[in-house]
View (cartoon, rainbow, N blue to C red):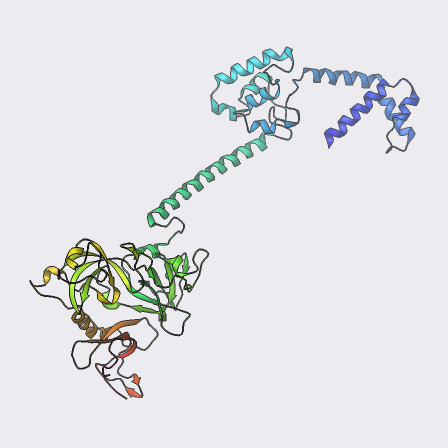
Length: 468
C-alpha cells in the first residue's frame, strides 16, 4: 500500500511540473482535498528550486542502482529455485538471455560470478560473506540484496534455523515410518501395528471352539487358539477388559457371523481369519487336555481303530481337494504314516482307493474321525493299534482336576462313555462343574461325578448315570 501511495504521488508531481499554467494545476487537484489554499501551498513547494535540486539528487542515486528483471515474481520465489543468494541476485538483474539489465554494470556481474565460483557451497548461507556483499558492499540496515522486500538478517537467521529443524523432523518421520513398516512386515500384517502382547504367545495358545455370542443356544461358529483372559491384555492398543478373552481365529464355520467387537476393517468372522480378536469368556470351549500337544498332528480312525497319522492342512469348507469342495465337518489331512494299508478312504479317487495309496498325499477325512496324537508312533509296539478313544477316556478321567467351580469360565469339551464300561462313545458335551456340593435335579453332585452339558448324542438308547 505504501508503494502504491508513493508511486501515485510521484506521478502527480510529474504532472504538476508538466503543467504550463496555474489553471491546469488547479484542475489536477484530487477530489479528497477540499482546501484550495492547502493545494496551492503544496504545489508551490513541489515547484520550488530547492525541491528540484533534491529531486535531481535522488534521481542520480536511482540511476546508480541496478534494476531487477523479475517483474511481479520478485526475489522471494526465485530464492526457492536457486542454490544460493548470489545466483538469485544475478538471475533477478539479468535478462532471460543472460544479458545484464544495463551494459555499464557488466563488469559487476562478472566479478560476482567469478567470486561465487571460487567460494564453497556453504559460504552462500552467510549473508555477510557471500559474493554479493563483498562486491557491492555491506547491506543497508533492514534490507538484504536478493532476498525480496521485508527480509532482514534477523528474519533470515530465524527462517534458516526453522527450515533446518523441519528437515531434521522430516528425516526422523521417514525413519520412523520405515521402522514401523519393517516391524509390520515381520509380523506378517502390514496393515496393523501389533503390540508386544499380541505377538508374544502367537503359537502357544490352547485350542478352543468359539460359540456365537449373540445366540441363546451354543452354536459353534469358529475354531481358534486361546491367548489370554487378562483384563490388561491389549489388542490394537486397547485392553480387552474383564469379561472377554483374546483368541486367534484359525478356522471359520460361519463366515457371515458378526464378531463381538467390530473394527473399521473387521465386521464378520470371515474378515478375522488369522487375526486376534476379543470374545466373551462364557462363549469359549477350551480343549485344556490338548494344550501340550501339537493340534496339527492327528490320527485318522476308522471304526475306532487308528489307520494313519498325518498333519491337518485346512478345515475351510470352501477349500478344494481333488477338484471338489471340502465341505463342512471335514478336514484336509496330509498322510505321513500309514498303519492300516487296507483301510478304505473316505473319498476315494481314480488314483487313491486305499489308505496305502495316500501316503504323503492330501486327503479329505471327517472331523469326528480325527483326534490329536497321544504319543509318537515309535513308542508303540510292533503290530499294536492305538485306540484314540481309549486315550480320550484316559484324558477325560483326569479332567476333574481342572475345574472345581461353577463360575462362567470357559467350559471344557468332553466325550461321554457308556456307563456300563463298554468303551462306546454315547455322547459329546462340555463339563459344567465338578463341585460335589452342586445340585443336579435337586440332588447333590457328590464325589467322582461331573455335571455335563450334552451337545451331541451318538447312541440315544444309552442309559444315564442317574435316571430321574
